[in-house]
Image (cartoon, rainbow, N blue to C red):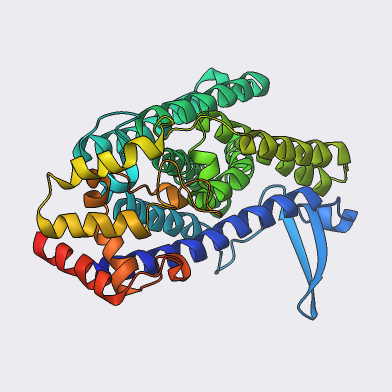
Length: 409
């Protein structure tokens, strides 16, 4: 449906804008906090714990952080929360529009698990909010007081969610659900911990009461968690363009490695902001990424169907499939087999695409029927498929596809 495509476009666009604002603010404040320096004594006498000077956009800026708070609460106080909230809300809306409305096409892979659309959506929501509950429980438990043990828990948690998601959903759907869970954890850190702690601090300063140091420490810890989650989340946001990752037979392990390496690389920059430069972190991270790319690029088994002798079986399969279809469906099936399956197949024969683009495969009538609206949109409405019309699909063939789609709808 064209209106759904347009809605998806605008929601995706807004999601990217909101995400840039949120992640940019996160990076800035971690950088700011790590670059504060001890101020002169006269500033310390005013309660300033650290300050920083910067130049940008033709002007000088001075930023100060108070140990307690200002003597008088300013009339205008800027809060940073809606960047997080709008990113999450638009991301969840996009998840519903693309993966839940299109569960049969993008979320369900019968080779992984047989699920109905309703079951897949239920599993997806349970995965996201169940994961959030586990993370929150761990943070609020005594485990949160032991950084090394908590780090071990986080590693185990990441491995488990990556494996579980790829055991339930299609590779593409699994990756996006891991991303949705990480994003939900990040916004949960803002909503459940950072913002309540800041409200308590503001109230205490306004009423000239003591501030509990644990408020700021807890909020700072959750901000640090969010900081390390950002690079993995950014990868997952673009992962649907790179099927060689999520269609790998060990796609869960590929995702775990990418999350670990990107968080490790982020650690280099966090240390750098503190004045500690360790090139070995950046170099080892880059080497790790290169080795991962080499491993993923090696010939392997994938989540797709097993290798078969195409010459001996393809013609028979097409005849058997077509015999169960109406004449118009037979025509549509043959057109798609001729013009689309070279790329969108478990075993692509195209000279460029060795893995089905976006994980979309059209080998069987069930796959074609599940993606009917997408096929029509790309072949009849926008006419950008086949790519560069490499297989010379004619206008008459496009009209046949349109007639098939209109008849079944």
